[in-house]
Image 1 (cartoon, rainbow, N blue to C red):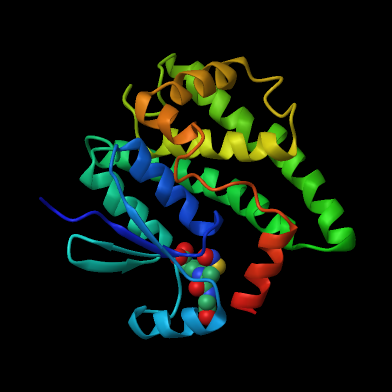
Image 2 (image 1 turned 60 degrees about the vertical axis):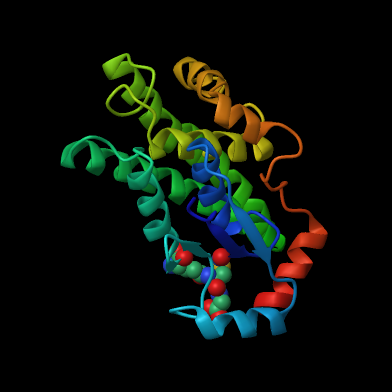
Amino acid sequence: MASKPILHYVNGRGRMESIRWLLAAAGVEFEEKFFETKEQLQKLKEILLFQQVPMVEIDGMKLVQTRAILHYIAEKYNLLGKDMKERALIIMFSEGTMDLMELIMIYPFLKGEEFKQRLVEIANKSKNRYFPAFENILKAHGQNFLVGNKLSMADVQLLEAILMVEERVPDALSGFPLLQAFKTRISNIPTIKAFLAPGSKRKPMPDAKYVEDIVKIFF
Ligand code: GSN
């Protein structure tokens, strides 16, 4: 039996969380090795291609670069479409969700005016840019999933993004009935339902202690 993928990161969401989501959605068990200090990260850097995490040991490779890791997992577990066009759409949608999630990922690390402004930006861009786009995609083809009427990486990341936005902007989905139904539908896929349940490897929303720890490790 092939060994489980090993995820090297801190014990928090960051850029690794989408990788955890995707593996979980694919029903793949994985191990995690967390580093907690600058010194541990320094040691790990000896085996990191660009001295950066996330890093995932999978199928004999030590993969870095979040998107390369996501695409490998998606392709391996049939979550990247059936042809070039579906793949392009899935990656395009995925990149949109990642732009949105990046706004939120950095938010707890901001201070003062920038911190206040970022929450306004998250709400505006969710309600006026990203959610209308995804609502329209679902409306246009009337299917249950974003691409090819089948679960893909884009669906998994859109649900992750929706939940991240709702943690910060609770009413963000109020004008988007198809996205509300999408959220319920995708959340009920058994592998995803298990990941959303307490005790899974999903990481909590960053708190002040997490932000402080991350700053100590990386800066
Ligand atoms: O998407 C990626 O994986 C890369 N393009 C960026 C990865 C990255 O910026 N990693 C940072 C930590 S922030 N999020 O995980 C990192 O490893 N910084 C250490 C360093 O010395 O650069």
